[in-house]
Length: 278
Image 1 (cartoon, one colour):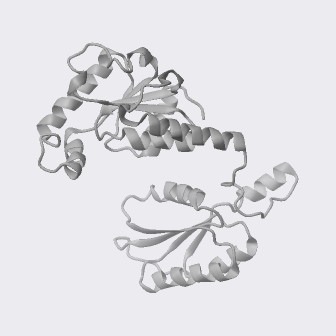
Image 2 (spheres, helix red, strand yellow):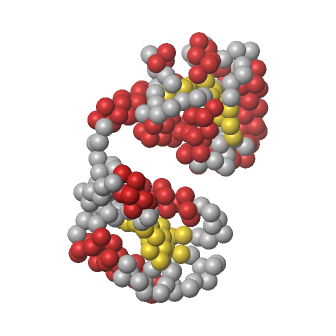
Image 3 (spheres, one colour):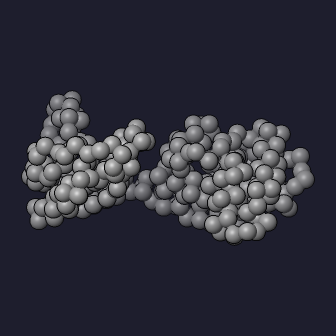
């Protein structure tokens, strides 16, 4: 492998996620590693479905172009075919093979060699699990933002929160990634004053999980949707969040602050708190 150029830590670095499949695994694992270096800015590129020598060489050309610009590229790869990995290794980058070592250890433990068949991880695989995830997504769409109260008794969790606190993306992530049936309900002025939970979800209090955020963050997010409105004012956001948190506490609804958490982190906390399993 060519020795990578050492870049100024203040300069942006190029980060490539290269895969012979969708790139989701390379992205997820690569980003988990990069998150440990918050002081460095990364220019990220995801390149999926690299399955031929010509495609691998095209990727190398792109990586080398970034290297020439002083971006000292990092390449995170989950490509399984040895010949393709060899081509990627000729790039002017630091190559991080996310499967290296682990596959060898598994081969030794299982007493057999790994298949080089492409795209196995993100293929249909377990069709029952796949269709369960699709049904969960359909359920999430139907029950987004309190649109439907049908079959709420089938929900694994009901996320409640004021508008723009992260209900929908968290709902969709739990459905698509974990196959959980998730409904979400927006807390509005019509839900107050009340001691209990809103009528639509009060029977399912043991399945409810609340989200909150900071007034400033909520105001910023709402301002992008409705600039200079009462809806996005700092005063309105403060009132709504205070009422929501009081409601959670009165009804013993677990909740978390979404202002500094990713969808992945929020989903993990919800699953752990509600004792849910994919």
